[in-house]
Every structure is written in C-alpha cells, then in structure tokens.
Length: 283
Image 1 (cartoon, rainbow, N blue to C red):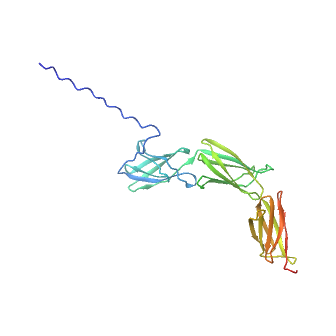
Image 2 (image 1 turned 45 degrees about the horizontal axis):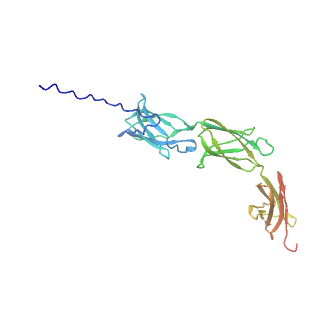
Image 3 (image 1 turned 45 degrees about the vertical axis):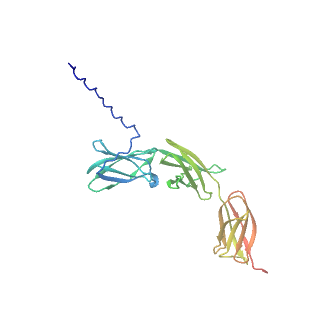
C-alpha cells in the first residue's frame, strides 16, 4: 500500500534589502500634481545633484528626485494639501520648506546656503598697512559672483555661507593696482587669507603751446617695448593723467600741434609730474 504523499518543501521568502543610506534611487510618484523649480545657491547659481524630497505633514515620504545639472527638479504630490519639501546637497546646509499644493502645478525655487566661510585681510605691499574700503569680490569658477564687500578700518573682510571648493578673489582699491588670486575654501569652518596690494603709480602733467595750456591734445604713453600702455586727452587746463602704472621706462607722446616725444622714467611710489611744451615749427 503506498505511503502518504511527501509534503512539499517549505518555501522561504527573502526579505527585500533596504536601500543603502544616501544612495537611494530617485523615487517619483505618478499621476500626481507636479511641484517643480530650481535648487539654487549664492548668486542664483544652480546646485546640481541636490536631493529633493517631498514628505507629508505626518512624516511619510511621497516623492524623491535628484536635481538636474541646471538645478531643476520636479516631484509629484499625490494630491492637494500641505507638504514639506526638503533639499540637501554636499557642501550646503539642508533646507526645509512648507509648500501648499492645490489643483494646479506648483512652482517653487529652493535656495541653499554654503557651510563654509572666508575671512581675510587686505594690506599694502611693503608698508604692511591695512587698506580701508577696498572692494573684495568672490567669484566661482564660472565667473559668477558669490559675495562682495568692503574692508573694515583694520583692512579685514569676511564672507559666510560659501560652498567648499575653488574660487577667485578680486580686490580693488583707490591708489592701488587691482589683484586677483585663487582661494580654496575648506569643506568646513572658516578659511583665512591675506591679500597684498601694490600702489599704482601715477603720472600727471600739463600740455602747453606758446606758454598756454593746450585743450584737446592727445597724449599717449608707450612702454620700453614700444607698446601703447594708455592714452588720454587734455582738458581745458591742458592737464592729463595716467594711473595704475608699473615702475619702468616710458615715452610720452603729445599731439595737437606737431607731435613731440619725451623720455620719462617712473619709479618709487606716489605721483610723478611731467609737463610737455608743444610748438609749431619755427616758433
């Protein structure tokens, strides 16, 4: 007599592994109401690869996407109501905002602030004195301005909420030559830097003819290599001026009457005076 049929082997269902933290693929609900916009940083620059998550007021995730290279995103809300929109990206402080969704698509841009800062001092080269009121501009690698400000009475400046990475610092001040230098912003905390400005030399003078100032004369400055460095036109007082010059040998040419060239050496610091007397042939 045949024995009882053998029972089928028991089956086991393997648990579905949880998504690795920080590496979850974008999740987007379908058939909902779109919430879209851009994730932007300082100066309205786009923040690519930012994670944008939409959660209900009860804390349930209803959608998640990763921003495109231009910072744009679209996540669908399952229906009308109030939600919390969370954006996060490396080097930025996370941002949470409440959005109210109705029957129509919602447009919402998400601003993010950096986690790092920059503090520096601007001094005059050689004299080591603070330069007051210097304009300091921080720009990213694309040339977009991230922050700008003037130095204090002690020559210091500070920028907050910067994104880690390289930037260009441009500094200008009256009486000094402008300077631009690269700065690497640390991932956390405050980066410190020192900037030296070199005094821009100045040449000024008066163009005269027959002992009187010559208006509307053209004055040209040429360096030792024969390159035209600058040009100016005299005013009613016959005056002209060239600023932000390096030390060295120059030739100054003035035209209005037959042109005249004179030799000039610029050195040291401050202001050099160089008057020019023009005359017609035979005078």
